[in-house]
Length: 86
Image (cartoon, rainbow, N blue to C red):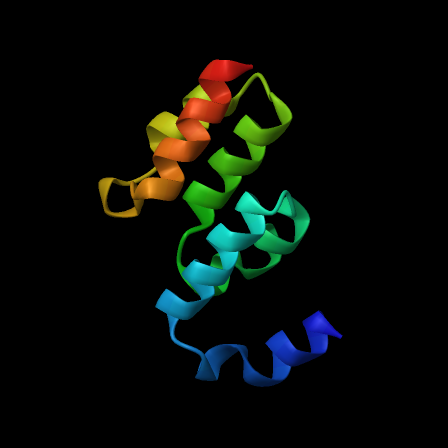
């Protein structure tokens, strides 16, 4: 299963690859899966903000503002747009 693979091989996969997977999971409406790999991707603040925006959480705006500039890629702007639409 996914957790076993991440536990066994997670540190062998570069953070950029985990980040790519995380973003694809969010785009595919699989936020729980994306949150599981966010730490390995080095993008926990982005993942937390994206998940909050996805579900219309009242803290989404605060979490989006807290995302470091280095994590503000296309996925960040997608999450921000998603938040503004809700």
